[in-house]
Length: 611
Ligand code: M6R
Image (cartoon, rainbow, N blue to C red; front, side):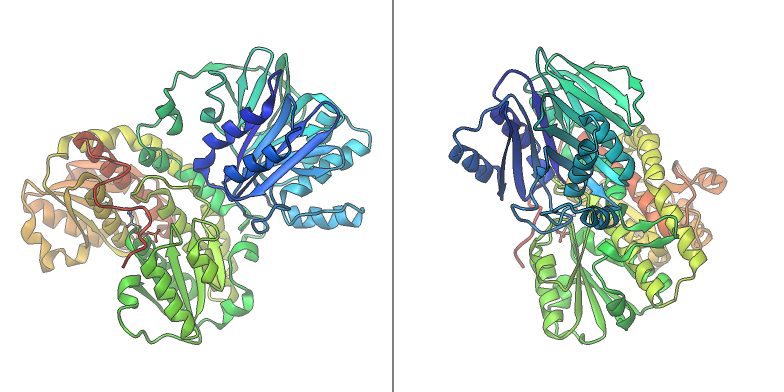
């Protein structure tokens, strides 16, 4: 995900901008750039690769001096990794950086090109620079030009803009992408997050969606996008450098758990056609022709990504009506799989580098299957070898235990299944419209669950943290979530945990149940709920201590369970996105209370490139 910084003041801005970008490196990037106003004009420096390359390029330009500038780290979305696609983008007198996605960029590009604009890159960002330039050329002041351009833009953005003709102002704006202002003495700052600015000031202004700001050396003005003034409210941030890196959270894992609504919004962005009630084919990674030709789907992955694949199994069979198999990538490649023409192999991997998944995809490709990669890391090995790519946009995941990438993978699989179901006419207009609407509301529900259950789950973790074994039960779409809950607990708290299909309990695991074994049951209101309630009662009757994740207002759950965590009622296909959240929090709090190394648990690696 891109990072942005801006500075206006009296100091030389190059080191300030590069230092800010270094603080934003955690967001992931593949190129970087600066635009510096030297009092006469704007100097542009861009480089592919790490910040070292940008620093090298600025050193070569030893005359690069100025007290107004913008800096950017780019995580490629529209257009490959190249210097031309790196930000800042320049149009006429305007230089602009952007974090987010402009959804209507194709239509705007066509119009601008028709008007004679020479667009040099493949990015959605350059389009915004040209829009601002067009308005300024038409006689608008810089601030009005930015405002008018943003009226034409749909999508998410945090932008920073400078004009060659105006060395006294830096203009920024935000909608759905983060942007923070830093207040100094005779200088002001902008950045994607607080840590990027913390070395220079602790006085911060957190911008809201739909706001613009004009930064001068001696002050900041804040407006709505329609031009109404907004009071500038400063807040003092007293984070230590370590806290700053984690945005105030104790661990990356907790930060990433709470980033999930945003990760879902970003992964949805540009892929839902809400007005048409459909999925937009542009960034699904599969052409309509290939989608219609698929006879069988094979989902391969490891660990948490394998649990996402197991949920994807339901999505493909129900929504696309296509026979689907799910395989652990290590087992898939351990045999000589019967796979080939007519099969689509979806290789799912957060890192995009997991060796077993990569080798499994290669075997399938050699045998003639179509390979689609679902990955979080752009241009990693699996998407590079695949025929198509569907990127999750969860942002870099630092904690070894995968959380936000898991829900982003569920979403990628769900959108893919809807898309294929539309292409092969398995899914009706009405079903699709309903799903699209529910998907659009999903981030709100996830936010509610995270904020509403955090304290309760922490209290439950405190009561049960000494348990040596924990059982997780789920049925249907929530069976993989039970497996995921158990995996999370195992890997970070080192507590033995087993995930089971609820219907399997009486075939063995019920023998384990006594008062020392907490049993976590997933019981959202879905087609399997009554059967799972029966399993819950069976376990309770054998003395089990029952922790239940149920839909709001489920009286039976309250009557039977020792602890109930409620989640909103949603379409059952979407329930896993909500039921997994308390399980992630439970694992986190147990581990934290035990004092384990939550972000880097023993013996585990984030990227597994061995067999
Ligand atoms: O990068 P991948 O998604 O391919 O990684 C697969 C597994 O190694 C990974 O999900 C692992 O199980 C995590 N530690 C789970 O939290």
